[in-house]
Length: 149
Image (cartoon, rainbow, N blue to C red; front, side, top):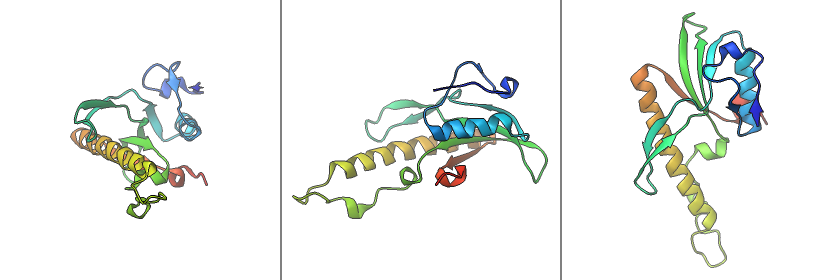
């Protein structure tokens, strides 16, 4: 869906083109839009190059949100790149689920989880390097950080 901010001046980019891809993102966008400590924020405006372990090729990663927020301890603004993901996708696949088929073969579900984990880990490692070069932080927000479930 399309997000319409109440405070378009806080959005760094075109505030008429903010797209959310999940209700979790929508919830976080609303928080960024009204939170008094958020100086500015943006969604999918930055491109982080990474190499996929699946095909070995260069790809582009668009992190969900970048927030410039006042640090409560220092009183100074700092920038945080945030990826919003279900907690289950932030951990390597459980090897005990590998052979959960009647024939004892490796399940397709497990193979998909391995592929997803490999790509996510490559993206997040690239994002961490990108942030380190700029003095930013990289964080992954799950349902726990978002107060969902």
